[in-house]
Length: 114
Image (cartoon, rainbow, N blue to C red):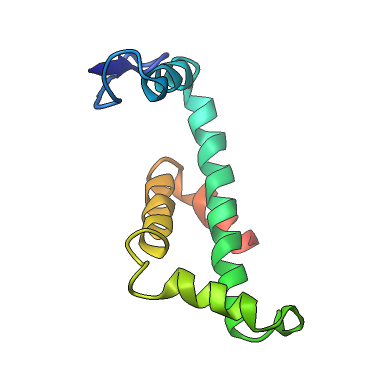
């Protein structure tokens, strides 16, 4: 099954089969997606991913010590090799994908402002 990007008309394959909910939601999302929306969506994702990375390293540096050891345990769960494929690696990959959708100066400004 394939869907078409609303503005560019590019065909995108592999969004479920038939009339499943994920297929319908993807069709709705992609039909409303414009180049400007991709740009602003990528900027928002980059900001969130950078905040997540910053929060992780703040926890590791002891800046959140008042929250107890549980917060450090959560951070260690996020970074441990058992969960890397589903958490850290996916976040960094998404950051890379967003970087490809933006002009270099916008990406650098967003990263450096965080």
